[in-house]
Length: 160
Ligand code: RP5
Image (cartoon, rainbow, N blue to C red; front, side, top):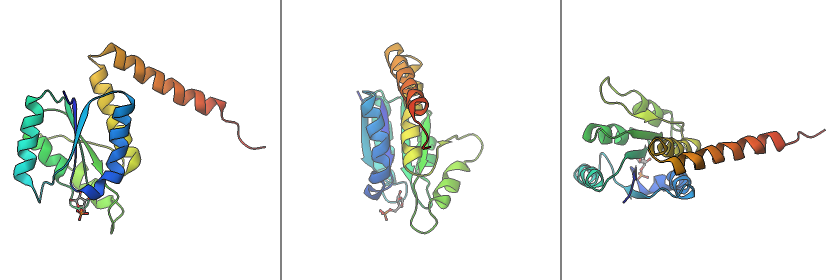
């Protein structure tokens, strides 16, 4: 069962969205990743969302760039949590993606993360945190991950 659906507007988004996939893999969370566009393949996107819901998906991570409507469209089609990742776009460096994604109208929320790699990884970590609410083993892994990060910071010495 794929607990998380990762969707991106184009295969050109994969270089960023693979960060989300890798993070889920690291936590042993089953996911399915697809390139489906709100603009270019709206019917296929809608069908996939319904199918994922039927197959037990718990949340979606949606990455898109430019006039980034994908996360909003996913949120319009499901009541599952939708985590949006703005892509660093060619002309406006992702500011267009961020504003398109974050400025959702009242009533249809998208939890929007940082532009690019950090946003993709953090969306996956947030998805892990959501799943960890009902999964003690996953919650323990998340705590261990945080501790590992903290230990690295503390162990790092600044140059003299
Ligand atoms: C968006 O347009 C995609 O999410 C992508 O970030 C951007 C460019 O897509 P391509 O022209 O590379 O397919 O829909």
